[in-house]
Length: 292
Figure 1: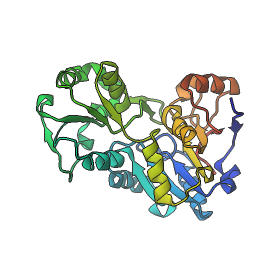
Figure 2 (figure 1 turned 90 degrees about the vertical axis):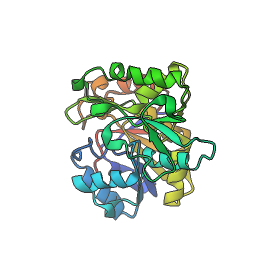
Figure 3 (figure 1 turned 135 degrees about the horizontal axis):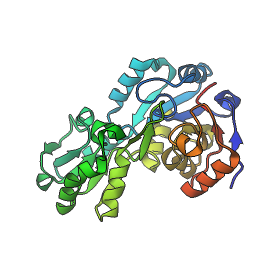
Figure 4 (figure 1 turned 45 degrees about the vertical axis):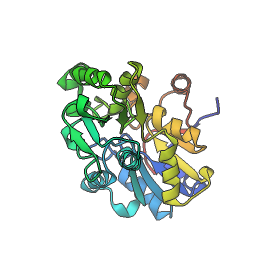
């Protein structure tokens, strides 16, 4: 395994890169509040003239992700672009001429507008659809609301019987709130559907199209001039590995409980190596938080 650098701040490596690909949930915020120092760190990078894209596996259009960023204190002056897996999904489906025009939706009410403005029509029963799209779970996968997979089983079984291809607008398995609560994401349902023999298509990180679009938007062709920052080995770090990008792992995100740490802390080298080996993804560096 390549030696992993332990960093105290992003400022230590900022001069080494021209462009940054930065995750949202788990790095900048927890869905509701910025992490301490994150607003300032983003501003510091932009003040140094860095090109910045916020690349998120949020299962919604980019404009909605921008609205959240505005609401919680991230100025649009401090980044160049926002690209979400929901945005990638919308355009991929809209531009697929072989795809039928009727879809069945699985996910919370707040994201059911993901295909608004497209050529597709929503159906209320899987049997009437040409494909299904999943954005997540009701109640945002909050464990306080019960067994989400069990609640979704009737829909999943109906989709399997209808042999619907499933398009997953968020490959993430979990996200974590600042209070440590783990929330289920759409990737959990998509993985189960696939294991049951269903056809699944994923959009977002770690898939190549997300990085190709990021490179195109920022205009920096050389992958070695990029630094990717995220808290998911499964998506952020694996995607960076596969695309030849230097990666920084924020260990206090979704893996914090496994490491026995809090946001703002890092695990031991032994803990980190063990988990990276298991996940088959190795960051170039690890950092306690997105701070400058």
